[in-house]
Image 1 (cartoon, rainbow, N blue to C red):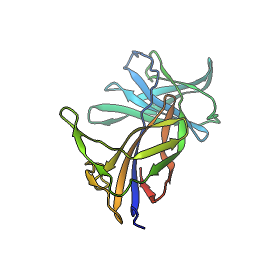
Image 2 (cartoon, one colour; image 1 turned 90 degrees about the vertical axis):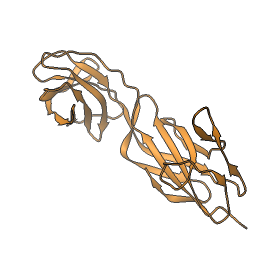
Image 3 (spheres, rainbow, N blue to C red; image 1 turned 135 degrees about the horizontal axis):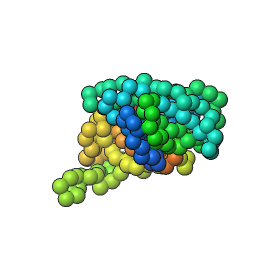
Image 4 (cartoon, one colour; image 1 turned 30 degrees about the vertical axis):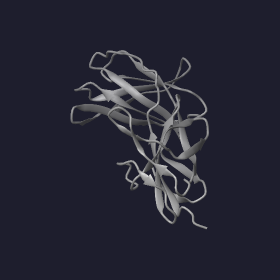
Length: 219
């Protein structure tokens, strides 16, 4: 029986998540946290500051109670961007939501966000295409889009499948167009997005299911 040889899956995990940001103008500059989450027993926080800010002061609250800090995180400069990345050590509980506030260490008002939860594993099920099925690129008013997409589903309610397309060569640079043939490798490109209140870890476990799907994945 002729079969599709295999499907290789390329997945991108969008690390962005909707975060409530507070506005603050500190005496020496503005320090804005972009994301904070419990990782192990520590809280990781990162963000940006106005040019000339030497360090960010960080405080952690559970409700209205200060549970850590203030601690100072040195900033780094890359081009025109001043940023900071810091781990607040402690015995934090990933099931709880903490409020993380930052300001210029020289003094000023706080800008605060709530911690989000890490997504540490992802599961995707992909159904191989049928031999003889054809994918055609259709003009969408100035840009082309495939008229058929991979049949894919995800497991879990902390992230969602934003886009699924057949890819030409596994680079994610060009859509596949043509007829699926037997004994041939094909590539599926998936874009996964974390839902509000969640963010992907830097090295999540990725499980791929579906007949004829390669176990190797590029994330």
